[in-house]
Amino acid sequence: MNPENLLLEVDGPVALIRLHRPRQLNALNDALMDELAQALQQYDADPAIGCVVLTGSDKAFAAGADISAMATKDHMQAYGEDFITRNWERMRSVRKPVIAAVAGYALGGGCELAMMCDFIIAADDARFGQPEIRIGIIPGAGGTQRLPRAVGKSKAMDMVLTARMMDAAEAERAGLVSRVVPAASLLQEAMEVARTICSFPRQTVMMAKECVHRAFETPLADGLMFERRLFHSLFGTHDQREGMAAFLEKRQPHFENR
Ligand code: CAA
Image (cartoon, rainbow, N blue to C red; front, side, top):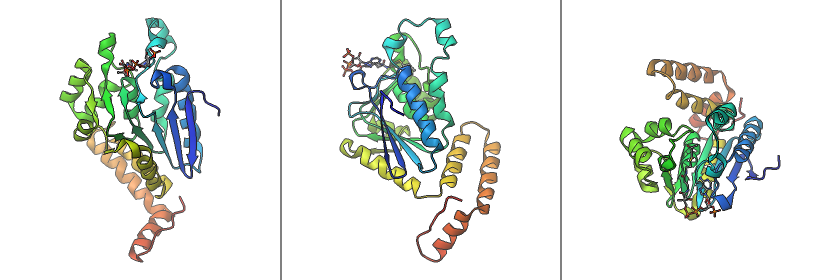
């Protein structure tokens, strides 16, 4: 794969994807999102990769969907080409963890893309917002659904209706991001977190991710049953035996992803 709008790197078991349209503050057009969907699919299928980090530049994770690419779209064009759905939604089928490492602006589709990731690590200069109302539209990549789930109705309404931005400290207080780190060490910290995840049994990590996602899709009783069944299934793995034996023998576990 030789993408024009992404920079791809692999560091051991961690794949790093950088959004790369610097002159447009990483505005997300179809070409970029097609490449992103393809890269994610490729890393998800690669047994050597355990975790993906998705990042932008120092100035912007992404300043939204590309306004110049949609300014003249009409209704039937948007519907006909399955705008946003066809490529953006591919993120939802990725089974390995994807961490968003956000510095600078994460606005509109940029904020929505970060929220599609499994969790967000923010630089202390990160700014989140859903300013679509300013250009006459509403969030179209899940912002009205994921933002209230992350920060509650009041803050979500405030952001969606007034277009105000949330800084990193507020985003952490509100639960939108899991940690805030100094901008200068964002990538280093995100890669370290990814390496920690990769040190655990691969399938167990995938099941844990699947279970947490289930919490947002099902009633509690169904979610608990789903979790319990996967929990039971892990007692059939080598890595459960090894993890528990290593704890009891006071040594490091040697996981084999089976
Ligand atoms: N689409 C296309 N181009 C964009 C863009 C976007 N979303 N955001 C920034 N750019 C471009 C600018 O047009 C500018 O290009 P030129 O140099 O060719 O003029 C370049 O990036 C730099 O931007 P600015 O000069 O505006 O930079 P700034 O530092 O003064 O401001 C900003 C930064 C506050 C992020 C401002 O660029 C901005 O408000 N951008 C738009 C944010 C926005 O409305 N996002 C939502 C888009 S709609 C959406 O995302 C729908 C959805 O839910 C899927």
